[in-house]
Every structure is written in C-alpha cells, then in structure tokens.
Length: 278
Image (cartoon, rainbow, N blue to C red):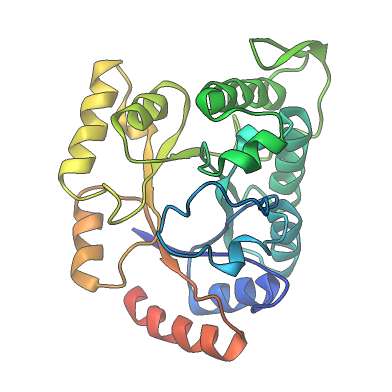
C-alpha cells in the first residue's frame, strides 16, 4: 500500500513546492491538494467538522497551479486533487488543465473529485445544492470524452457541446484515475458507475473490512470488476496496525494529514510519518 499526504496549500503555510520535494526525498508516494475557490462571507453553510471554519479553507491556492509547480520540482511523486470541486468548474477548461498537467508531469496526476458541502460557494458558480451530483457526473463524463476522443461531443442537461478538438491528451491512458469522495451508498453507486476508484474519509463512515465489502457488493451489483477500482483513504490514521489492516483489505493508498503550519513544524511531522514507510 502506498502512503502519501494531503495538504491545504495556502499563502501563509509551508510552500507546497517545498513540501512536495520533502515528501519525495523521504519516499512518500503522493501529494494531494485541497480546493475551495472562495468562501462566501455570509457563512450560512455550517462547517462539516463543527465549530469555526479553519482559515486554511479561505486561503487555498488553485490546486492545478500549485500542482504544476510541484510537478516541476519533483520526478516521481504522484500529484492529486483531494478534492476538486468539479461541480464548481467549467469542464472544458478543467479537462485541458488536467491533461496539460498530466502530460507535462509524465503521467503523475490523480483526479480526486467530490460534490462539495458549501451551498453558497457552489451557488456563486451557478450550481445548486440539490443538483450538484448530477452536474458533477455530467462534467466528469464530458471530460472523459474530451480526453479520449479525437472529436468529442457531449449532450446533457448541464453540459452540452457539439464536436470539438481538445488537446493535449493526458499521458495516462485512457485518462488519469478519477476517485470519488464520500461515504454513502449513493457514493458507491457513482464510483462503480463512472469512476476509477473510491476516496473515502477515515472515521467518517469508512471502516475495514465492512466498507471494502460494501464497495465490492456495489461493484458486483453492476458487473464491475473490482480489479478496475482503487481505494484511497483520506485523513488516514498514522497508526501502523490500522494501516496494516488497510493494506490487508485492499486499500491502495493512505493519505496522512499535513498540519497547517510553517516549514519547521511540517518537516518534523514528515519525519515522524516517515517511520511508517519502513
């Protein structure tokens, strides 16, 4: 099982480029960056974690720009979004950004996606909360077409375009792996229907072996081969026994949380985490 990290890259904590280099030097597999395009000041949507919204949610860099810098500074580190709020993004522009990043990085991108929780944030982008998953699905399917077809077209309720040329194509074939976040039975149905893997949060409904059994049952229900699916666990525990259980039950990747802090504190934490790699 691979061990990587996730991080809120902002304008005040350890630069993502320095973190990427430090992760690669220590043998970690990947770095996933979180996304919020902005946070409406109204703050009508409560923070899912409870309490006040951490300031890192307000100050995030654009993940694709930050990952581009990380790609240029590394050679083997996998680079992902954890998660990209695709219901808030134009699919044609995002497809090109991802294809460009994947090609220029030598096929190192992993596309973690989700529906989002902040109602006002998505409404500012023209997406309503009740239709966010349908919007997300159509945009993902449209992006797949743009990545894999010479003359791509898509016709849906929320995405609609006639034949177009869209280049570059991603280095990975047919496209970078698409991992869907969430823990509900509906998430699992979407995973096996149009994604390449599951991206659950530890402690938020994901527990081995029951969760892996639920994914297998969802795949069996639609005739999906489990070997075509992968599981990445977000905010995985830094506990060797629990990580061993993840590995035994088929989890592909565990992502550890990087603190919202400066370089000294982050590097200290990385050295602690590095003991889990042996």
